[in-house]
Amino acid sequence: MPQVLREVDSFEKSLHTAVFFDGKAKRSLDYSRCKLKSSWTPPSHPDIALYCRLLRQVLCKYEPCSQRSNEDFVDRAARQWLAKNQQTVCVVDADKNLGDALMPRRWVREESLRLLAEAAATVDSQSYLATTADLKCALDSFLHQSLYAGIISPSLLKFLMKDFSSNKSGTFRLRVKLHKNPVVGRPIMNLSRTWMAPAAIFLTEALQPALKGLPHVISASGDVLEQLVGKRVQNGFTLCTFDVRNLYPSIDRLHFLEIVSHRIHRFWAHKPEYSGFLIKLIDFVLNFQFVQFEGQTWQVTKGLPTGLQTSVVFANLYFASLDDFIVAQCPYLNCWYRYIDDAFAILPEDEANTVFERLHDWRCCIRWDFSARGCKGPFLDLEITLSDEFLSFQTYRKAQNAYLYIPRTSCHPEGVFKALISGETQRLFRTCHGNQNALRQQLAFFLDKLQKRGYNRKEAEIQSHKTLQKLYGRVSTAKANSKKFFFKQTFTSSLNRKCINFALKRNWHIVQSCFKQPVRAVLSFKVQSNLFRRDFASNWLCAARSGCGG
Image 1 (cartoon, one colour):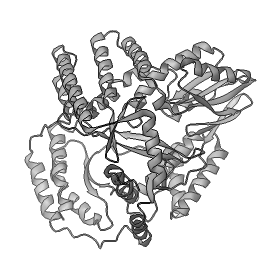
Image 2 (cartoon, rainbow, N blue to C red; image 1 turned 180 degrees about the vertical axis):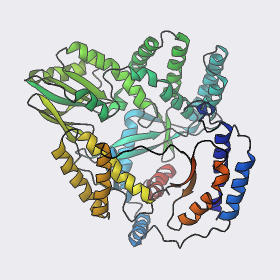
Image 3 (cartoon, rainbow, N blue to C red; image 1 turned 90 degrees about the horizontal axis):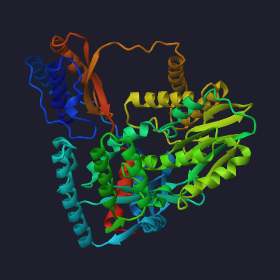
Image 4 (cartoon, rainbow, N blue to C red; image 1 turned 180 degrees about the horizontal axis):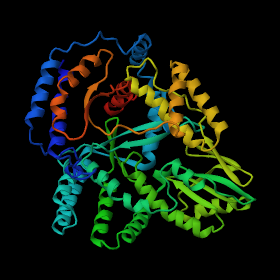
């Protein structure tokens, strides 16, 4: 009962807000995506208050359905086995979304220490606290000077300093690269709960405009398709993809700051004070890179930490200079596109080795590998084929992918399963652009994997077909022009949706009278935390933090 009633207050606030603004969204209340949420409270409306009072009265009579556990015998047995063997094995997640892996704890621990030793050094608690205090004082002074100079607003100052009372360091873990031979780990340094995290969040947003104008940087495979569909390629040209070996620890910070500072100054040439503020804040963020592993504090002294919110933005800004260099040095390139540390090029076949050498000329400490070379190669989730001077596309799948889709028996709302089928169908339609034969094969492959995860093959085919009909434009996707208000509940098998929907609609005419346009109340669902996250946190993260090495 309390779980059902708990959301009524937030539901009522959303109704009051909509009435106050006459149904129009007021985005300025949230300032921006990188600032504090507004503490503004909408004035009450007597009709909305009446409706919510009646809603509470109806929900007080709510009776849940009979509950069914989301865990089966296998889940319980697996948890017991993990508890008994936690000194020898642990659950970790694999890189590239390849699922979850059960790994020897000793290997995970040794790989974690190896990765930490590459880019970090241990510090004692006193040194950590002293460094933290010095950085806080320096940043406090810098931020207030920026405020008095009119570079930042009081609300932004409040956001950047909101966690200054905390002395928490980040946490370290790894993801397993199952697609590599031999298997290695990817370091993940989570700094989202440190006092410097707001500055990293702000920089992620503030630096986005500088990325939008970069001609060779892409954000998804859709950008590649937009540029390459219909593109004609001369005879004698080939496809090449390149990959940086161990990117983030390989970046020299002094060189990084030099390159990025120049680019920021050039982009914000009309606002030199603001560009100087951004560069100095980047320096502060890089100077506070402390993570905990097995009770020991490590300071990251080399490269950019993998897992930092801004690392992707930093890397793209940094390598934009590489893009300019390689295009200038190799004017015979048909095209050059890069996604962080992965690059795709169409070039003369006899110039491939020359381009590879030029990549190392830009910065010798950053080592590149050929990922693919020839008439066919993968890039992101695309498999690109060059034939008869034209390019064709289909979905690229990694051989190690276990296709661990949500089991059909899992305790999720029905819409989650439909969205999974519809979303993957849309992705396959996009990546197999204009290749009908490949699309049919990929859809059949996808449906086979779903069937092995407990899905009804016929129902999945129907949902996939409906999605394709919309994508081909054979079915109208126009939606009713009505505003929706969402009443959120955590989905469980015992949730009595019929009873809650009846309660929402019973007195809805009171709310409708407050609006000129049609409005609807919709029961929406939050999903419970999955079993893997619970096992992962208890079996590996907690042990790593407490120093249980095994």
